[in-house]
Image (cartoon, rainbow, N blue to C red; front, side, top):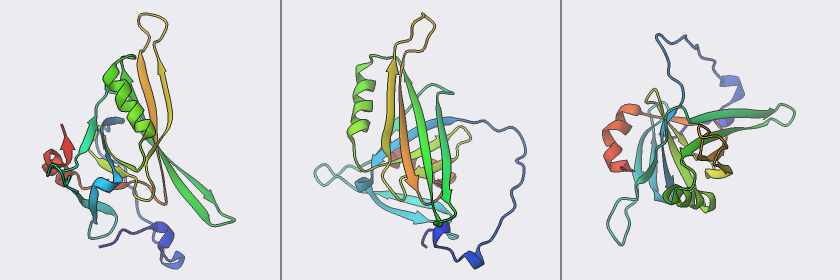
Length: 195
């Protein structure tokens, strides 16, 4: 099954959908992020309706025989967010969705964090999976590579100030990020992510 793309649908057959108010409390924010190279993705399977991702298959390293897993990026609660913004030009009929994933890693000067962030800054061909605090998963990098668009680091001034690295990963796409089937992802996380 192929993915449905709003830009490829016939305007006459475009359908509107109801949006209900969710029941219960909702917790915002991002829990974890998993990053990999696009070349390490063997395939991405669409759900039956073409509106979400039902499975992701990874390549195997020819030399080692190991699966080219996603790398897990962890951070303190309430220090990461994902914002998707649409830019539409009605005159030309063009549009895009820019998704900015902002991550904060505490403790400025930590060598491992500095090297990980520096590697992301120069890497080409990235994709990312974002795990929200609601245990929903979305995929960034469906149409174009994810890249680091900004990075700052600071020590703070006062003893209680933050000391951290802050990076923004950006995805520019034709549609909002696709959801990944949460039950499938959680059942397969040990095979997909290096923990």
